Length: 265
Image (tube, one colour):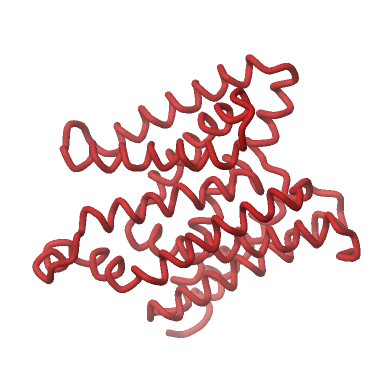
C-alpha cells in the first residue's frame, strides 16, 4: 500500500495533521475553543479563494487570512462590543460568502470548492507537503516554547496576569496557532472535518489521562494513529480519506466512553 509515492506523501501528511491537531487540541478542549475553531476553519475558505484568484499559494493566503480573522475575533472579543459567539458567526458567514463568490469567478470552481470543503490528503504534492510540514513545525515549536505560560493562563487569567504573564498576547498567540493549524487541516481533510481533528483526539485523551502531560501525549498519539488507520481503511475500501480518518477518531471516542462506563474508577 505505502510503496506508492502518493501514499507515502499522504501518510506523512496524515501523521503530521494528527500530531499538530492533537497537540493544539489539548488547549482547544481545555479552553473550550471549539466554536472559535469552527469559525476560523470556515474563514479559511475566503483566504484560499483569494490565493487562487490572485495566482499565489492558497495555503499561504489562507494562513494569512485565517490569522487576520483570528486576531480580529480576539480584538473585538476583548472590547466586549458583542458576545464572542456573535462575532465568530459574523466572520464565519462573511468569510465563507467571500470564498464562494471568489471561487465562482474561476472556471471549474465547483471542483476547487469541493476539494477545500472536504480535502484530499491523497492528492498532496511534494511542494505542498513541504509547506505544510514547515507550518506544522512552526506551530509545534511555538507551542513548545510558550506551553507553560499558555497552560497557566488557561486555568486562571487573573493569577497569570498577577505573575506578569501577557495574557492577551498569549490568547492571541493561541488563536494564531489555531488559524495556522486549521489551514494545514483544510488542505488535507477539508473545512468540514478539520475541527473534528482538533476536538475529538483531545476529548478522548481527557477520558483516560488526568495529568496534562498524559493528555497531550495521548492526544497526539491518537491523532497520528487515526491518520494511519484512516488512510489504510480508505485505501482498502476505496473511501474518502478525510472522512475515514475522522470516523476512526469518532470510533475511538465512543469506544472510550463505553469502556469508561464499564471499567471501575
